[in-house]
Image 1 (cartoon, rainbow, N blue to C red):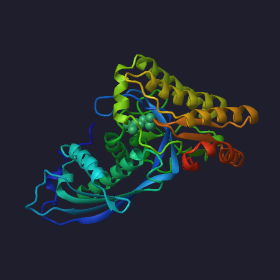
Image 2: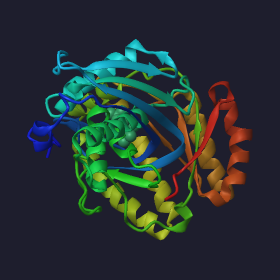
Image 3: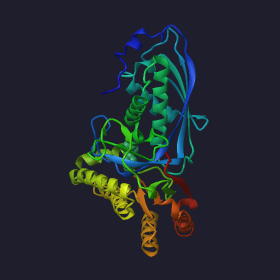
Image 4: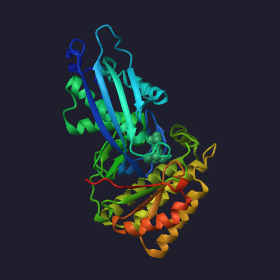
Length: 366
Ligand code: PMV
């Protein structure tokens, strides 16, 4: 399945060449934080293990796509694009998006029939060291699917629409596959026995039972470093190809996902914490034992982790952390302990944040 529209009869019969069409499409996509990490890929952005993430609420990208069909004399084998980020024309992002759209052109030829102007903005500060590729690629992919729907009258079925959006988002950035579903608390991506009909090609909403304790789960993102990561995701994934622990890691992801599904269903916060912190440590351990090695945690990251674990021991509040491929810390806790945890974060963890910065977020509600 590659969601190609090349052979689509609509495409052959389309009035795209004759009749001018224009319009504006907007989509908002949330950021997500992986609990079971995707790290290592093969083929065209296919994951080496299944992943699972919480969908966030306050951190999102909003993308507006302004399209107009080309006239008969203009080339249909080229992408015509202008890209604006936070109200300014952005050449660097434009180049990246152009490359992405060009890579889609052979299977999504309608992209060559339109002039595209894309305006994108994030709800979170640009310099916070928060990866925006997941939310931005997801919002763009949703816009592209809507464009196809409008131009070719395809993708009328909602499930197919979202699967294709997740599929296209995945081609832009793996974790973006999990960001096309707003208002879905948890998504999974990658083949796993735990989730029926799961696929390596696209992410799907997690439909297994979720205990009340995990409803409206809180995620406070502590900004430890606002600098760009010292290793790109692309290079990081590639390092897994020669990592001596790769096979064990992929097996562990499967068993951790199984354990996490049990914890989510039963409200077992001890198992949740065990799995989630293990996944974060393993991700960073993999980077530290790659060749060449990378240390992505900062001193502040470790101090914060130790303080979270000590606070948990002292209070019995099921607070824990996870990490992305960077120094920032996501602090996770049930909504019912929000007051105590925010108080602790503000008094004890804020001093270790870059310029005292942290962002309050929570898992999306259905
Ligand atoms: O989507 P990418 O290629 O930037 O990879 C993201 C990898 C992690 O954020 C570290 C884990 C994940 O599953 O999101």
